Length: 205
Image (cartoon, rainbow, N blue to C red):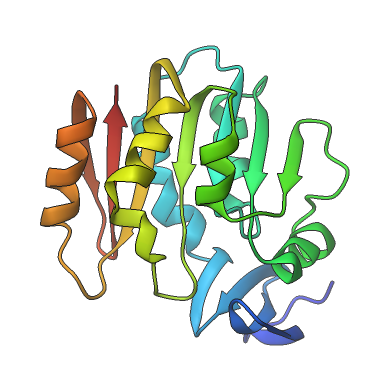
């Protein structure tokens, strides 16, 4: 690993799902970039630190992450829940390769990585989770099912008693007001954590 003052591209690949994806290195740290936006590493940790810090510190058994990417959020959650087991769902096998090679997610006994569509996974899954993190982006685009009632209800079914779902809403394009209203129709309580670039919704059943 080199310590570059300017971001240096060290890996790139063409994905059928995300288009051109690349890994850049700066100051000895890696960033995963898809569609021109940083998906993991870099500023992503600082963006996610605010919603993660708002979660209660308690003993958590299992955490589901839909949209694993490079797994930046796992590092933040491990600091808060060191005993937790993780299931990370990622649709793009090329990103899974990058996560293992550059972001140290290979062969972790606390992490199971599933290469699958997040909606398909939730519909057939039976396990419940204490925390569910939803970060489903292809660059700046959310999948169409993200806002649909069927998907949101499938998420609620996967949430354990006293659990929390954290939805990441990038402030690009459509306003989040309709999505917030849809959440309130399904979940008992919905809180918001606002950052400059992202709105996070914390939903409880």
